[in-house]
Image 1 (cartoon, one colour):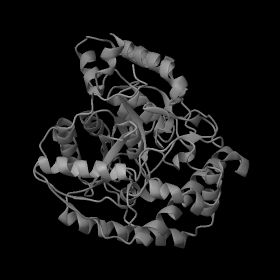
Image 2 (cartoon, rainbow, N blue to C red):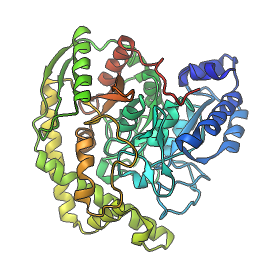
Image 3 (tube, helix red, strand yellow):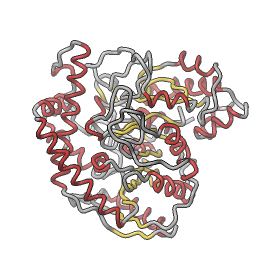
Image 4 (spheres, helix red, strand yellow):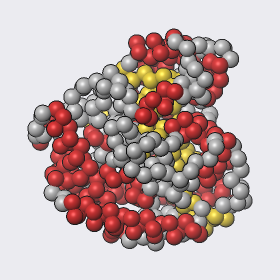
Length: 476
């Protein structure tokens, strides 16, 4: 198989070649490994390699999973794999091998995916760019000076560069959707409780965090959700019933939808002109496809959202760091962390149980306000980011005051955290490119539990405005 042929297929396409015996799983794994060795010195996307393990997995019977024999990467946050360390981009977490697979990883494996290693992340996944002190910055294959997004930035860069067709990602404030936008990929943030976090966790940060993947095609995203979705016994909450097949749904016309769009944040700040252009062009495309489109946004208590999200995030970080300290016997010191992380940790340590409960009281009220909005509108259209992808080095990770360090990030991420707070599904699609050639993700949020509408529309838009033939300079 030539280099070009490998890159021209999505994950399901490669699995079909394996099933037809036109190529073997070991050939695909070796091809992916060769791409890591070629591109990773520039991208810094893969930070822990399990090549021998992957080759061994490719040589045994594959089973009948939808992705049988397809190379894959796991993110260095969650996604525990037996015998492989997960350090969450932090010097404070030792490189200790996991004693078991996460439930999600077992489902990835059952689907036939073969992991080649772990991908780069920012420290504890806190920010929308991937620049940790322990691993160094991950670079965007479209332009190496720019961010690959975060916190699933390594996964995003690897998929966009054609190293693997699909990679693990997760999202607690936009960490699937931001790398999708930055790298020109499909990134679905699922409904709260749709994918499992067991066996070690019931939820993360009260339900802000969900698991998923980054892909280059809508059908890969849908098939991956078919493979992973479903609660396990003991989960603290369950998502609404799923359809028989998300893959079938993404190939089903969505019908006429009522879609609202916004060109400014909920607090009234106008998006960057290139983002406004992307939204307006997408709105016109949707109208041409027969959908009803009008300008509107949810009426929510912005103060409640802003004042509640960060304390929940900070207390979750404090739990994670103190939990690591308890398990390892280490004492957290300021020198162990980047300044931003240390400041947020200190904030989290000061939040009382009553304050935490009050934060969720307010966030649940916001969720109800958004639910009222979706009684009228099927989807809410914006861009994933408030401005085109930033350069690496834009944000100050040395600043210890969370209010100062996160202020520019909040303007950069004007919409994505809302769906983490409400539990709604949302998707970023590569429908636009900026004047300097960087992808601009277009973002759709749907009703709680309604990944079906998102995937149906995504499938329609992929046909109407294809992106499969657009590749970054770091490719091939």
